[in-house]
Length: 318
Length: 271
Image (cartoon, rainbow over all chains, first blue to last red; front, side, top):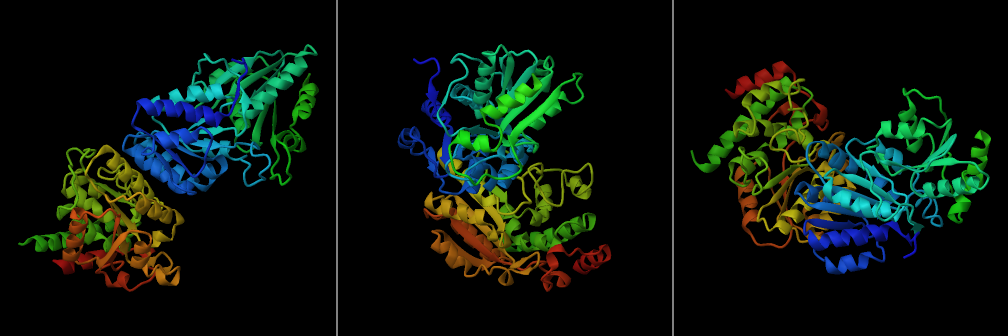
């Protein structure tokens, strides 16, 4: 097996939920008419526990809430932007609010974060989900950077009875973590590379970019740290701070609007009131949508945080 | 007293208690709470709902989802009377130490969901109905909805879902009081012909006078017993602010509160 196996997060998630469904008849998988190659087997083998609710994200969340109130574990699958924004108030009322009173194991699976639907235009881009879901109490927010994290998340999702949102990249991506890696879901962060003066904090797809630029600068004998935030909520700020405190500069990178309550705000909060003199630089999308078509990297470049832009920013601080 | 006379006496008592609660908490939407009293009375005292106040989460209970949360203060005296919670709690409505707010939520014993935001109840109830079928529990899921909240698109997603998935254990009751906050529904979107709409969506619909306990009881009892494969909807034609002249004839009665002395006068005249 290739050390860096390339897979989509959604196929990994569906395959692993499929395995759980084989031994656990209290799991439902619901989709808002959204498919994946691996979903066909699940649809066929679990006809009575797979439900296509139709193109109806609001009802997807409501049906999931009802099933969860009766003790079922539910996976609710849809396009990330539509799931989190079309059904936002359903998520707030029937999951965030209600789960403060009752255990509800609903796992919202959003596919296509950032510009992973690069050719589909701004309706399919998703730059808002981190900040808007993060602001809701009682919802766990997982932002994996590879399929290994997703595989481990499925175990976590069965055992943890709180509502969760997991934001999946739409593209096949190489693994970052070893297959036997262990994830501390309450801490939510992992220092992938230890650096000298500059540390990058990233999540999702941008962790791949962070690793790439760190590798590139390594060839010039510059040691850039890379910290992957795979749980945006809960996150242990003390743990994050401990990882960050020896850096002089911390650069956050996220495929989301910057300065809008996303990863950057989470890092600011972790630094706030703790004793360290750290410069903070935030990279992400400007406060506007992208109407240009093109590959993902070109969209990041026109938004000024392509690989070269990131390297330029880092070099300013070197 | 025969069965229906007993129910009617309960209706009168709940009406008085609802006004007393409104006096304690003038923010309560009293007009909305007066149109659904007969529905609550028939469900709880008419033997329609299975429940156990000693074991509120009893697996074999029927589930009642109150989608029109603002209209459910009139359920508080019933739940207290049936010992879901202490009667003393009623006097504390709206106060800091009370779990009884003017819009009930899942903190109140006997309530299943968070209420207040309209158009959520039916979708959640569909999920519950599906779960009960999956568990093999022969129990019903009742939903109380207002007519105005049928304006919400998510409700129609649920209506389509329920009939396609043959949720025969689902019974929707529409408190069709025909008035939303800004006036008559006919002047807003016009829901009629409502029964035909539900039938066209694959439901079995029946319209009754929602202030007539005999009609409500007979229809709900038939819904419980019959063997249809479809979800059922009872459209209960009601009057918003029922029984209170200064509310009943006012299309803006949704936000109208009665003054303490008005309530005292009404209660005195009931004696």
